[in-house]
Image (tube, rainbow, N blue to C red; front, side, top):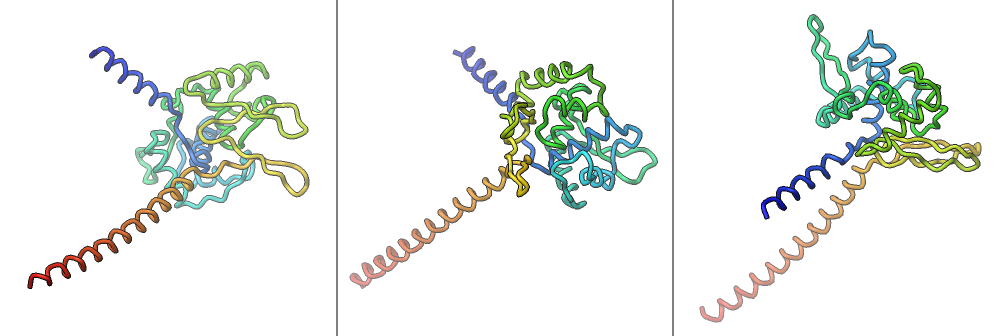
Length: 243
């Protein structure tokens, strides 16, 4: 009996360990930017807050483009620190704190995998060919097959880090996406083209649920207060009968 309980606990622990960390858009942009800069400009890494904000908002290699403020990035850093994906570095002789990612250890990513994850975090879903071209500035793959094999390995991991989306309308190639959040939605533009946009922040749905529960609870409290007043009036009338 004790062995069965121990086995159940171990199974439960394994299930929890297999849950992939969930990231919102700001977190993907900050983490993706840190990984990218680590691989492309190691001489300027770790990054100061100002450098990280600039990296998040740069016009190239970002889709969708962002215009994050310092306080937004600071808040996101704290959220990623809680998730153990980013930590602060205080270098000797420097009065300005710097920040670096912890994806290599926390997510068990080798350099080739980090380069692909950075591209998916920064630019959204992409084909194998696109990833091969764009990630080459961070890691030199041995062609498309090497990229495909690396992605396949990440998809078959537990938990799975990447997945494949259905082709865009009128296209044949499937695109890879990261699984740190719901798959992006395909949005049609006025010119007939289409782009991927980040999935809505799941926390907004949670807030709406909490507000709905709060409203129901408030109404229930009001009803109980009304019933209490009625009981109080009845009790006073009952006592008057014996006075």
